[in-house]
Length: 107
Image 1 (cartoon, rainbow, N blue to C red):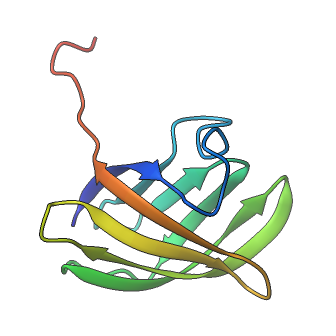
Image 2 (image 1 turned 120 degrees about the horizontal axis):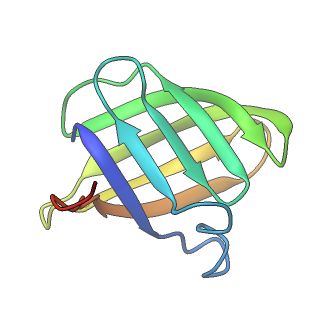
Image 3 (image 1 turned 30 degrees about the horizontal axis):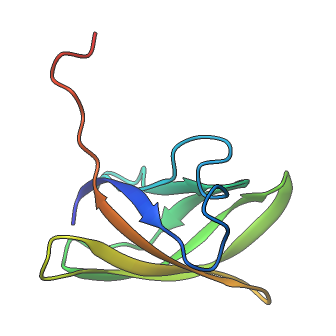
């Protein structure tokens, strides 16, 4: 599951919200730089593993206010990643992500 994943579906939000600030993503780099961003939310992920299913805690920002929570992600048989990012005491954000394809011609 290591790598950058493009969040392509968040059924709990309007279709334009996930990419409001930047393209929505979740990153598992395996070097302590795990993170995510969607809508007006950014977070640093803590406590991931290198398996097909992970649970994690996170802290970051929601509309410039401090935010934190937990979450999980699981690799699916079709190669997608399904998971949930939860806010402590608040909402849960379900997501589906696909491997982020980068262009080899980018400069």
